[in-house]
Image 1 (tube, rainbow over the protein chains, first blue to last red):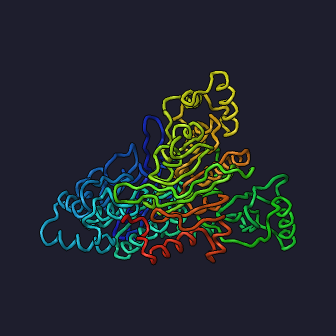
Image 2 (cartoon, rainbow over the protein chains, first blue to last red; image 1 turned 90 degrees about the vertical axis):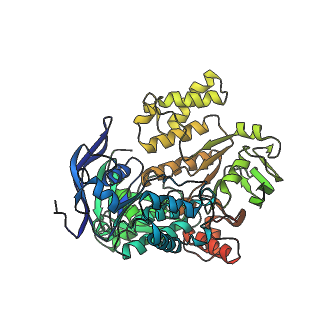
Image 3 (cartoon, chains in turn orange, cyan; image 1 turned 180 degrees about the vertical axis):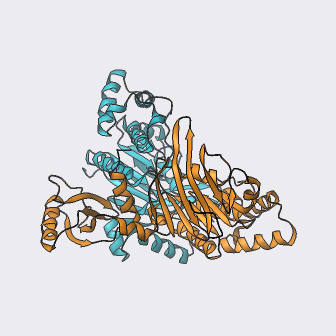
Length: 315
Length: 255
């Protein structure tokens, strides 16, 4: 394990957590560099929320240790709560209070008063674009705006580390983009962010990430490192109209074939030469009649995840 | 697909006080079609779905869902549709079979027929060997399939799915869409909302709602070529930007 120092915001060593015999986390170890945007990528039940709650000092692990901003999450929880911001999946905004009143409430909770309160509230309203809506009741905000307000409430005490649990679930693509712009801005100001998300396009935006599945780490690294470790040659198959799933004999060398957006991705054992590729393309055309072209593709985090999941027992 | 309409509305409108949540929308979905209903948060999707499901009476407009009048026959509509929400309404401490039995009974399926349908449905979603397991013991991907099986047990003409794949892993999401395609091929109409634009690509046709109106509609391929976009994600962004320019409010903002 690396020693906690200024360059490390979070270090976790062999963390385990059970809920009534169900393993939520299995020997999890990880390091989050200070000032980075770190993604916890996985589905429900992957252990993302459990890990975030432990880092937020709201829950204890069964074994293992975790240090956040140089302090132990178990022993130094009082210090840590003032230094970190945690946005749970269901953030408690008061729906019958206005945007401004919600911010006031959280400023009270964190003991922020006077000129400092006014200054920070103004800055956050400006930062989030919620300024024109500060008199609107939180209950009347759209899903995306609610999440921005929740983020502002989490930022009032100027935390150095932000823990965000699926902040963009159920948020439309436009608002998701705006929310991530706020996260990038915070990262550029030096804040460390740990963000849990099931969205693969958001995974691509992280500096480094963990792929989590049922309490275990499947893979970790920067998106580029994950791409480099991908063992197959990946091809993108385009076609006319809706591409149908292949029927009949799978082409020689094919490891996986699946839809991704409007195209199919074919993962293949690396070819020894151009001739192999030609044969493979002929086989693909036979299996997928709508296919019109095939070209090499860069694997994304989703392709990496698909490959790792396919090698495990069905979930 | 036999071409007959499962859902057909004209000028469907719902107002709450001075706020128009759904503003004269025309929706037309053919039998067996997978129809994706997209839009920004607060665009009126939920209100529209509630009207189509017979849970909310429209303020004005006309239409038919599964052959019943949307203005007067909400209760009849509800017997001919299946509904699956993002949060699965399953009882965690019941077995899979008990959950299915409960759903079947709620829809008034006779006991003898229920047995047969549970077996067939379980087979269709790949859960036959797990019927005696407790629901809470299963991974989320399986619970999602069980939820689909429950919503489909009474063989509804139309399945409404409201963000059905919220937070499952990429592999389970694809298996789930495989099942939707099989159901569609067997003639079930699928009406689905999602914020995953790659899933929207798997629909036969999609419509994009903004500020209570339908801002764009067509097959994924048509929309991409009409708006000159490489992906539906770009289509979505482009349509929303256009709406904002037209003064129809920022994405998701209520006026």
